[in-house]
Image (tube, rainbow, N blue to C red; front, side):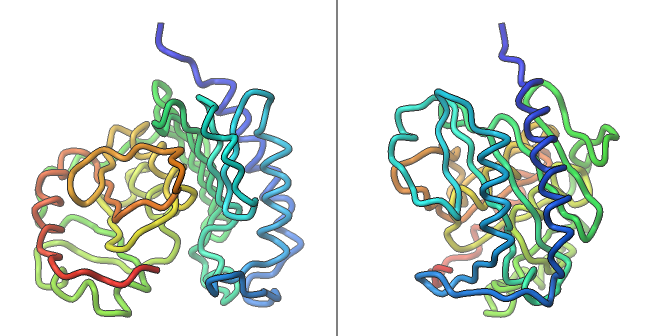
Length: 267
């Protein structure tokens, strides 16, 4: 019998609703931040949402991996692991750019099977699980039916575009839109609001696990740039470049991203 992720979806939904309420006390663009080791910003909102997620999601016998929690390798012995980014796109959050989200992923035996993306500024609540499909604000949705690369809407990393790493793609037949938050971009692909997205630099598991689950639940596919299948809950939770499509475009997208031959700096 296939596993049923109904209870997990309820937990994700409840956690994201609590997160939405908690985030109302913060004003994007007018919130203080500190620099973590490595230079990434962190705010009181990140830390508060991390605690809420842990309280709502984590049960006995499950592992935990979050950007804002010190990693505990005890997670490696668990089959079920929650992979969370309390605020993905903290830079956008701090700068008042409405492209940040809360991301939740459930990984079972290394596979992303359920996830949720909350983007408050856009009023998007995206939920999905294997065997359940995807909903956007409670309405059933899925990945797009587009099968031709010409005119495909691809969501690009604003920072990668700024560094010039997408220049070659602007000369191809796809339509490119720059955005922050890789988790939100993945959620939009899973909800059928874009055809594909990819990142050319390494990302952590918490950046992509929730969105990957939503893409898969919506009928799409996720891969590494070399075409291999991502496996989550690794000892080192940093992943190489990551791509997601509606599935029909996977071969064409892989051909397109293969043009990126030169190594690019890690974020």
